[in-house]
Image 1 (tube, rainbow, N blue to C red):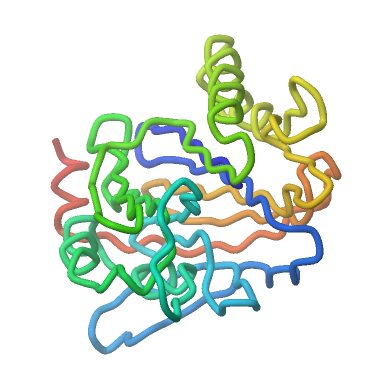
Image 2 (cartoon, rainbow, N blue to C red):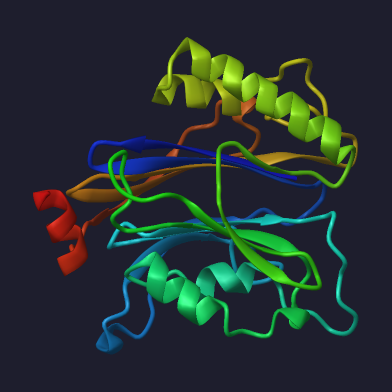
Length: 254
């Protein structure tokens, strides 16, 4: 129950994310700064925190690498005690590149996690460089693929939800592939305020937050809106001065 889309720009990208959760779930903590193992040249990163699992669903670091996670409800849940999928976001948010992240990520024991789709936005990603990568664990195998917006997960009526939101996304995109069209999509109640709309409302679940990540050549920021986007609650902003790797400098010089 989530919707992610993105916009590639001249010197970076923007990532838009609606998080949908069960009614009554404990509210997440707004974005915080994490600095894990700085002596090993790992990156500081921004991440909201889910108190229930201690992890998150989205993060971005000072190099401009971002990750987000969507539950994959159509997969097969492994037997036995499971680790919160949100820990994957926390544990893999300090990498400098998608290559190093994916190399380490694919070595873990996935049988300890419920199915998910894990998306990786490389630190050098832009309109002219790279693609958004995704890794999906269905409970039996892990596959890597190139993601296309929007990415959608739903526990109820998944096929209809995906079709409806995708059609709406492309309608907004046709009017202008812009930040404004992305925001309009994520705030939309089309075709009505219900389980099909990006700003989702069901009796048992609803959209609980909206997150916007911006990565440019100089800056990294995360803007967090608690509650459903239609409530128009004020944004909470966090920003990092961007660090550059040798790869990023080489890309900018091309």
